[in-house]
Image (cartoon, rainbow, N blue to C red; front, side):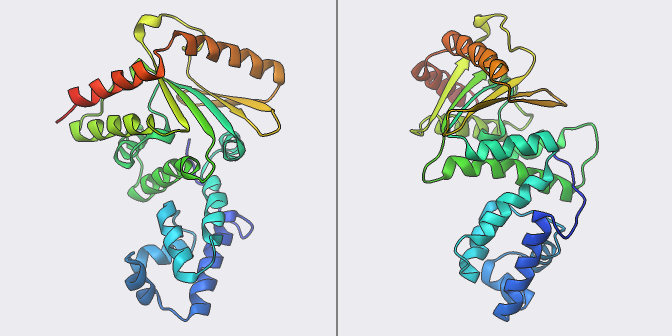
Length: 273
């Protein structure tokens, strides 16, 4: 889903790059001094200032501290990372950032739960060659979504994982084990509920792909259908309601949260390298 957007002076990414240059200039720091202070490579910092690269969230948090900007750079980064996505998915992410309730059915490990190593493998497995820079940027954009789970007031999240998502390991046993551990740990968070839909549940109406349902503070909702190479955002209330009913049926057929947690813990034990 990640693609490069044309750079222009009005893009959020360009604004962030300009602000980074301005802050370093007014602070009187050289790139070498900033690199020493932050422990990030000076070439990498330069590419952030030119807009050539999109950082991960911790980089912006560090620079916010260095420049004492009160979270300004993190806020600009949240806007800039949207530039890395296609139009429909960008709109979905904007809505996701505002949602108070997020329900999902996933046939693969969703980005909200992925480790960095798993995300790298997943994004690099495309038949289309990806350069190291493009891969790192795609990983940063994907992992950036996890920021919403770390907020002071995160949304209430319920994810139904198809058993197939937990039965398709990557070749590296350690990466797969660490990924299962991440899922198991996520299920322990107070605002996150994970259920497993077992193969025994049989055929169902959402077998064609993954589904995301977002509910806003005003009670409105949207549905996002995600296939391997496409996505469709639905905002018509009748359509959203139809997919909500399909989701409720899956939730009824899935293992209970405690049974799901036990199921995943067993997979964690079985996957130890």
